Length: 338
Image 1 (cartoon, helix red, strand yellow):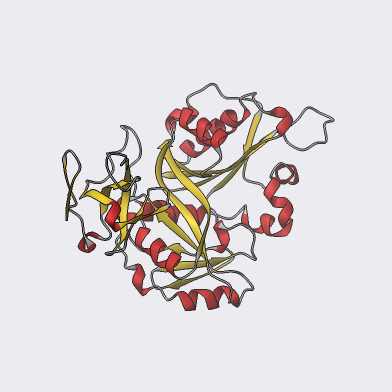
Image 2: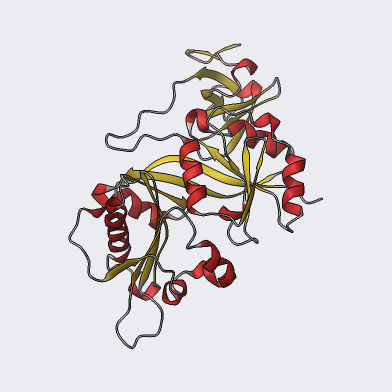
């Protein structure tokens, strides 16, 4: 297939390239001289005579009319990581994150780990890939997944990583979309070397311990949905640390800031970094992360990871400044109602 509009442009991609990373140029205006182009970069997840679907790094699927495609080619994997950034695959990080936010019950199913925790948080009530980055998701029995969750009065949710090279599940996302599984809650996984986070003067405002206190829970907004579940799940994990910044004596409004970190081998997983609205812009979030990082380093960890919602711009700004780079994205796919 070949189009010429002033310069030579070729389509060097076809159905045989589904699953590969591609760059596609397409028309936004149908006829010259008013024709305009747009470029789409991502994994080719569908190709037919009628339409082309490219799934971007963040899991967004872009559908193009095939006649509008004027150039396309397979491109190399994303550029290498920044110097000093930990080396890790999507599968490793997904498994570590799952251990750090454990479910109450789980079951292996066709290379996936089904997880349930009475509905408290999507993280603990979704299925995650349990095998390596090249696993065949076509064998995943979606009916069995749906039944398992229905037996627990829960919707079936799949945690679908994208933008991770060979570890992405873009083809699965396209399959699920075709079956009516809706996408929700897009998030970003970021990683960083751990030592720089702790490279600051110790902050006496922050206390770090292993006990989940009532005061800490008061600072965690999500706990209000199900305090009993929060008490069961939050202390669970390989090695859990809680950080608290207390208010002044006599102040009964709960902590000024909190944070949670789970040490699992070389990884320190940060979560629940929250600062009370009336205590923001005082460096408390950085202080909490620094003290948690210091404690994690003492336990032998060397790398940090965290998950943040895609649209949480203040959090992304903070983590960028702290040296966290984007590793991959993920979103949840919810089974259609029956």
